[in-house]
Every structure is written in structure tokens, then in C-alpha cells.
Length: 469
Image 1 (cartoon, rainbow, N blue to C red):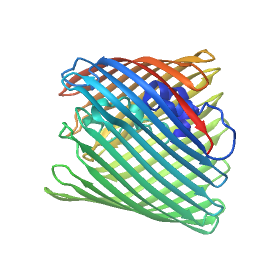
Image 2 (tube, rainbow, N blue to C red):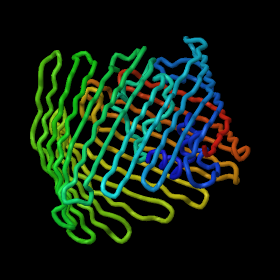
Image 3 (tube, rainbow, N blue to C red):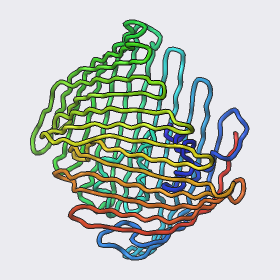
Image 4 (tube, rainbow, N blue to C red):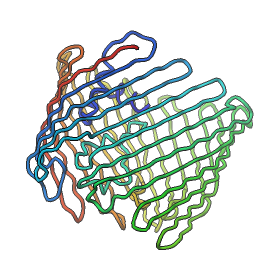
């Protein structure tokens, strides 16, 4: 789902803000005969030069990075199953101030998805790997989630200096009995985040194992009940050697009150047991949520009330949203408030707008929400992503974009702002060869550390090979 959104909904956006993976976007435009699996191989050569490419404080001088980017993909889709495998890596030669000349592999991403659907059951297998040098972090587009929204990682405020960040994510989910009076589902997942040769003391390895089982009960054609239990175990290699166990038991009910109105309610109990060198701490209590979806002639009206438990305490949120059907695009917005432990309140909300205007495209996303950092502290996070793509000729186009991210201060993380401005020109030289060039300006301002700026210009040329085995 993630790749489909990036490649079809906004293909040029990948070229603007995450050029390392441009080959994946362009490969989808190469015509192939329908039916059967599709294999793809891409090779691109990229040269970028600019000042303070690592966004260091104090700022470094001029540097140059030359990368040879390789990508491979195998995709297949039938009536009952889908298979996707994508791999990207880069052989990089860099010449940076105080580091001299170096050659290494970096910016590696592996994605695997397999889904199988039957009349009464389903299965999903996922495996992801992302590894890159922290000092060469290109864009927040590396953290796009399944819905195409930039989701800042918990360690965002500490991604500075040198070192390598690696993240592994494995997940399996199964369900059966979809058309029966009683259905069953379960899942298991493992996530591991590790670092090597880092200079920021705030970065530490951690591993999370989660599992869950559930049952659904068809009470009537309009009413369904569910009972879910989930368990999560987290180990953090921080200074306190923290271990955290979480248990959740939730009962839910979904009722179709009318042809337009759907009500959803849940109630349960959560327990969080955190232990470390400094002692044990248990947080437990009741949790619940209430949701409403009302279908209107041109979209949906939604309302959500949620009360949950986090390590720091209780988090309460209330949002009201509206989605609209617009010509050649989509629009949705929500607004509400959140109360975090300690009584602090703040507004939350989101806005998503995307529309094709003839051969051109404009998109905007804004989100303000509450999330946790690496130390499991709650913080308000704001992310904005705006772009415009204009077709100049049948074979060339230009894209303009801006990304802004803000994480507010906690007891361990400072207030951090990140801004990125981009302008990219793309030209299709032949049916298979593509050329991109552009400028990029990044600013990172961390309270207590200072501001780092990095202007750069880049050139990239390459091609894709697509065939059916």
C-alpha cells in the first residue's frame, strides 16, 4: 500500500524529496504487457555538492558526495494474493570536511510484503529494513507511513552527528472465520532499532516484541462485537537498562445504526510494568474509545473520543473530522484537543489535500498530534508537507516542495525544528533514461545546540529495466 500511494498518487513527489529512490517511481511508467510477475532493475548516478551536508553544529565547509544507486523489485498480483519485494542501496563516494575521502555502501532499504485472501480467511507477512548514515539523512520522506503521511520516529530529536541507524521490522497476521458467527485473528511482530559508531549519547538500541489474539462475534447483520488481548515487551539499552511490559484487554462493539451512521465503542483495561536500575513503576487503569462515522452526500463526518494509558500516564483526545469528494482529488480535515499527563492541554488535528489540475498536481498535508519519544515521554509533534508539480513539456516537469517538522520539548529532548525547501527539474531523455537536477535547502534548529543550515545542488541520471520473467 505504501509504494502504491507514492508511485501512483504522487509519482514525481518521490523525485522531489527522496531522490535516492527515484528509480522506483520512474520504473512504473515503463509499459509492460499485462499479466504475471514484473521484475525491475534500476541504476542511477547521482552527484551532490554543497555546504554542511551533515547538518553539523558548528557548520562544516563544502563537501561532495557521488552515489551509484541500485534498485531491484519483484512484484506480482493475482486474484487471491499479492507479492512485493523491493531493494535499494547506494555505493557512495564522499569527500567531506574533516573526514577526507571515503567509500561505503549506504541508504539501504528492503521491503517485503505478501498477502493472501480467501473467502473466509486471510494472511499477511511483512518484513522491512532501513539503514542509513545519520549524518547523511536526506529528507523526512524516508519516514512516510502506509498512508503516505510523514510519521516522525521516536528518535527524531537525536538524529544528529555521526553513526549508522538500522531498523528491522517483521510482522505476521492471520484471520479466519470471516463469514462465520465467530471469527478468530492473531498477530506477532518484532521491531529492532540499533545504532553503531554514533556520537550522540541520546541514541540507544531497543527491541520490541508484540503479539495478540482476538475474536469477533456477529451478533446481527448490523452489529459485531470483538474481544482482543495484546502483549508488548520492550527492552531499551538506555542508561537505566529499561524493560517494559504492556498488557491490553479490550472489548469492542460496532453497530450500523442506519444506512449512513456507524457507531464504534470499546472498553478495556491496560497495564504497563516498567522496570530498570532505578526501580519499578506500574501504570494501570481503564481505557476506552467512542467513534462515529456519518456518511454525507459528498464525504464523511467523523468524531472520535479516546482515553488511553501511556508510560507517563493517561492521554485523552477528542477530534472531529470531515472528508470531501472533490474533482480529481481528495480532501480531509480534523480538529480537536489532547490532554496529556500532568494536565497540559493542546490542540491536535490534520489536513490532507491532493488534486490533479490537468497535467499538474498540488498536494498539502498538515498534522499535529501527540506521540512518544525514545524515552516514552509524550510530546506534541507538528509536521507539514506541501508541494506543487507542473508539467512543462510532455517529457519534462518541475516540482517545488517544502517540509516542516516541530517536536516540542520534554524532560529529555529539546525543542527541535526541521525545515526543507526543494526545487527539482526532471526530464525524460528517452523511454528509459531520466535526468533530474535541483536545489535543496535544509535547516535544523535544536534548542540548546544551535542552528545548522545546508544548501546543496544535485544532478542525477539513470535508467530502469523492466521485464516479465
